[in-house]
Length: 438
Image 1 (cartoon, rainbow, N blue to C red):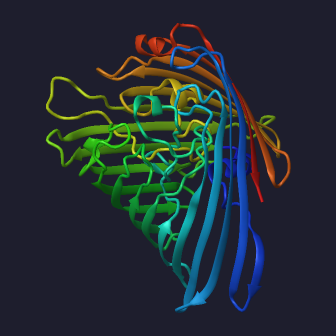
Image 2 (cartoon, one colour):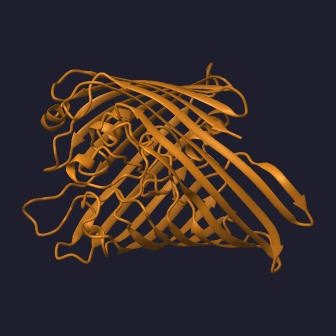
């Protein structure tokens, strides 16, 4: 993840599909119209699932197209975009049981308009679009895409499937103001409304301030409040986030030391509209070093993360709410462990996580990574302890296609995750994902 050139290029397609390239259709007198098409297709197989039913094989895919335009207006630039997405899941459905292979969906994904001042110091936009805060620890757009797997329980959380690929990412509605987004001091004010049934159509507002040093890194401070939640909708697990206040402080960079990478974040969650108030927190620290003079430029990285759990002896809710976390700067951030985070659990609440990662860059178009994960329950949370080893590669075939194969070995250790799996055997997880962007 810290191989500055190669991995950044390869991960651009995975973390920010739809923004890397665009084909210009029209350009005249300060007005432009461009088109972008991106997509992903993946095949997946597990020896075990987390319904106690044995292994599963399934496929996922999506294709996403956007028309974007700009024109001069009011001394600045008016811009907008309109895009649609088609997605689906085939086969047995995923190993967590969130999809069943019958998902097919075509939907609006992008519908936004904005204005940017001359020089870019002020930017305001509205509508259906993505929004990422920091490196996605709390907000990485609206990425959770469940399907029809829970229909049998009478729970409607279907967003079209393509669960692992997280096809849909846009919030249903937004209002975002950016102040000097390219300057050393930059800020955001945002209002976000989810249309995701899993997220219970959560609505929140907040502000973000960052200081960015090209040599030392970034420091950020954020505050937000959950403004509304559709009580009892979906799985009903986020009812208590209504009215919750969230504060975050974070940092990321090299401190001016070449080949060093450091990152941290601390989040505090308090209050709420329910009788039971929130009193939760989470934090992580990370350090890495690139051995730039060695062949293949190996990078060794360690991270520890902790997410609070509820305590039965108190009248408060201490279980950390992961909000809209998601993929940002590479595999494992912030879906931690390919098997654990996506299927077996835990998912950034009531747990401690240690990760060691080794990244290699044999060629400019190829990076290889191996991650070792250790999961442990925090406090009275469900015992989803486990170990996981993931080996993967990013191969940029050409400027349009990137291939990502992965093999994961997951060993359940906790009583609760063994019960979900139906045994204590080591799970073998295979996936092959093709990323397309034009």
